[in-house]
Image (cartoon, rainbow, N blue to C red; front, side, top):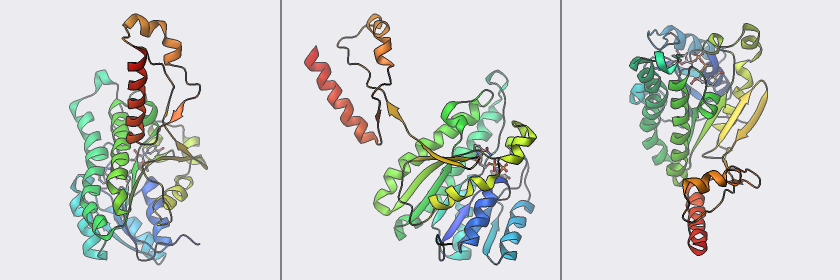
Length: 300
Ligand code: NAD
């Protein structure tokens, strides 16, 4: 076992079950001290208990690892980080994993369906990361993971709230990657697929059983190790497959003084993805835009 985490402290939110539990167990097995955060509520985000986090802490301790439970909702990120500081004196790793579902079509969606999803996924990741950030900046070291979803990348029927929140997290992590670069704080996004109490509502039982959360765990473990050097990227895992998701821009077409009719006439060129380019950062995008502006002005 060469990827060790001795001396490091991690917060794993929503670690009382599903994917988060496997991250907490694996990190602890590799020498990391772990804050096992879980509100212990139901999958719709409407109740709470201490039993889920306690159970995982017991599992870790029984295996000889070090862990402490925290039962706060992720909106109260400062309390979760305080648990890490009070018990272990530092914070190196934040895995924003806690999540709920409130699937419903837009027509039937209530304010509560929208707000709770954003409170747990987006406000939660913000609050925990924001509270950990000053410690990471001062020690010039941090590894942050946010958990998106294929729903956030592609959208999904009945998940306008969840998909919007999961997309928001991609922009959040990509921005933190830029703000954290000079402090050796790396931030990346995970897109997992696994059987869990969340996905058992939308997947058949045989798939829930087959898609083990443990298939996702090795990627996340590497993503928060000190040897990992990527930042501002999306990585995906599920079913024993590991990969990456990137944005490519088509070559498109510069059309000087375009009218709507010109757009319609040139639609096949505008949407052609042949020769599409990978755009890694917003500064690459700005440079590209300036060159296109020159091309536009010189052809008009
Ligand atoms: P899960 O329900 O087993 O785990 C989520 C955990 O978060 C639960 O233990 C729950 O108690 C906890 N939690 C919920 N609200 C909380 C809050 N306010 N504060 C603290 N803890 C809270 O589900 P999972 O499938 O393991 O999901 C983990 C993450 O992965 C979620 O963010 C989910 O959206 C995401 N995800 C999962 C899949 C998948 O296929 N399982 C796919 C895409 C994204």
